[in-house]
Image (cartoon, protein in one colour):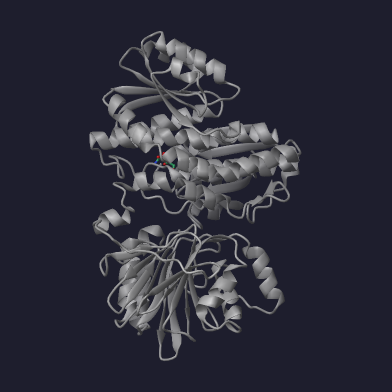
Length: 606
Ligand code: AGP
């Protein structure tokens, strides 16, 4: 997730671009850069690190001019470095990009074979080459961009500028946000209204599959075939702070709603529908040598790892252990070559997990990081790294980082399963088919927010909650309880449903809401029995079940339904109502949802 902005008008572009980027820095701060056209050529000034670094550089290397583009980067392809910073310039073309080019490896090979030379490791530079080539024969920049887009698969918002046509910016959108800001004799384009709100409130939100040609005098929108699209502008009434949250009240709510897009990004370029297989980017494990998989993680990442245990055992038939990183390092774990240790950390900076990695490496294990932050400390320490591409998560309570970790677990399990031969090609095909449908199904669930708001009002005054689940739903019960306690400060316990009778059943009375995860699957009847045990003791049951389940209503006080999917992937859907329940309970109580008391986004102390 990166921040992008473009300006064309009569004012100096650089201060406007930098001002906009300041509002976008929350989207990524691995590097920043601008390209500004002046006296026949555009000048690129860019550098690794935060925007303040770019500001300092611009003092030494000013970029005058009234047309320009700017970018703040959240690294996906290629480490954070000066060379990988945007804009990328190839010949007369400067490009900025938010998103991922799925077929970048094939395109890079094709371009290299015909003589292209690359100066970065990014997927974005490929697009600059493609447009530059098309421009040689195209009548204008818009046509060149349109022709180049035909070759590109993936999610993107691009903004392109050409030294040969300096009165034009061309932007295109597929799955990544893009908005045009309309001014008097000047216009803007950005990934986010926040970036332009101080300059104009008249905007057009660009739709999927649209190309917009932005000039000083006005904007023209077409589809990818060149057919005109007529669009009305909107007037934004949000405050600047609201706009940063995309109009949502809190970052957490915004991030809950971003999950379908985040999961689509985790999947981009990783599933091979022709070979019924997955790729883990550059990760190439010697699977024949793996005797055991050991996950180490903390908090929400630990819960994702417990789902990982279920998936890897089921699909790859390898023995799995899951350890809290803070325990692992202090118990002289029996570990060595033949163990694949998977360190799961959204931030990539959690000290306990980092020390667990050091311990595993010391003992000769192969260590793979699953992280959301490219080049953070843990991935750098590990032998291999796999990134979830969820974009920066601002809310302290993890939501999109968790669901994308679950997708990473599924990809890892399929990868291992195909290579241990425990997973048949048919089963892999079925699972991959379900994986690619997840973003739409997740969208259906996050749209049930109003129901969760009502339920939060109904149950939100309770002094405690119990969450129950079996199999892969047990970690989701743990996660539901963690989410609720960390933002609402209500005590909550997550339990394996079958364990309830061994103790927590004593808690049950009419004041205790019990959230039961009971999607259709092998444990369904058993969980329904546990649910009956709760109701026999006057406990209040809120069931999370599968759409089409007509039976469950008879066993629960309230039911939330999620779409059907493969049993292995159900956690990715069932956790969504729990995140929303926690959010609305906390919001009803008026707690500081995004920065709950006593917590920090990344825990770099023991
Ligand atoms: C989750 O909502 C919490 N903020 C917390 O449990 C978190 O998952 C934990 O601190 C681990 O963080 P990491 O994934 O960045 O390593």
